[in-house]
Length: 122
Image (tube, rainbow, N blue to C red; front, side, top):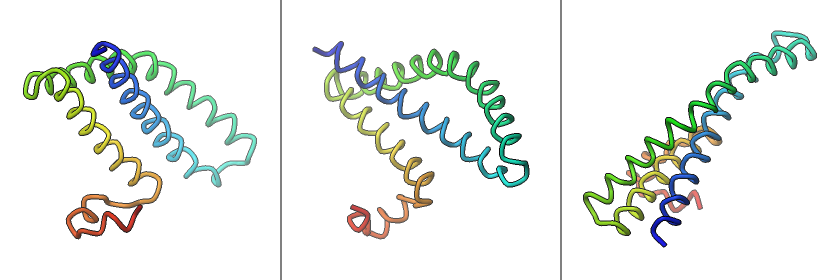
């Protein structure tokens, strides 16, 4: 049971982080889209995406799986096997939620939490 939960935690955190990095790079490229003609920009951005993402994704999966496993195992050390897994997964989801809210809506969740207005975002 624990092995399946551990795999789920590692894989879901890896997927969400990879998507966050991919969206950030894509958004950066799109910010330059009006500086080139449409077809030229499309071809250049496709080439850049391949040049950046191919090595990044092949290595990123290895690096981030290793990092996530260490991150989750650190929780095991401090809180025990199941509680540590749950705690570290919860921490990772909160961190990723912050960055997704920042990327998608330009919202700083820390300020909302400190002001006590986090409920207004739901």
